[in-house]
Length: 167
Image 1 (cartoon, rainbow, N blue to C red):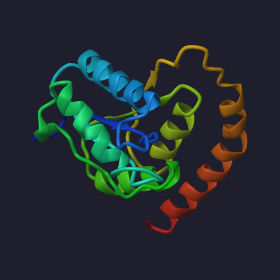
Image 2: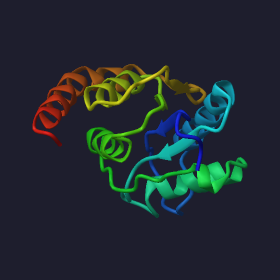
Image 3: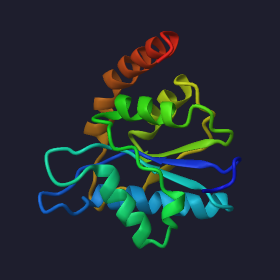
Image 4: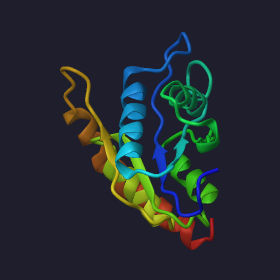
């Protein structure tokens, strides 16, 4: 495993296609994570998140395979396969990395990244700069940004409540 002060790159899940292949969004998030890992230098640990959704294996499992395909050493990949949404993934990662001495860097789509970073911070992790995945061609994130308007304060309040309760 990487050194004790290694950064952790947390990749928030995205859909798996019906044929068990990664969606374009997932591929872009993993590519952004690898790019961030190269920029951070050293030997960062990659934490792909996400349980099994409507299709295929767990999102974390599909992302872990993509990371290995990129040449990332399997010893540097720690899957978090239980999360079913952003908050549950963030909570599971916070529990997994509770005593992590390094910085945690979230990776997701641009519209989603602020919520991911805030939740990790509220759950007690030391959060460094994240990396937004490049949006797909013709992607308009207005609808997705509008979705974040109620989701961010709702999840933030729940995350703070969980942390106060010691969870």
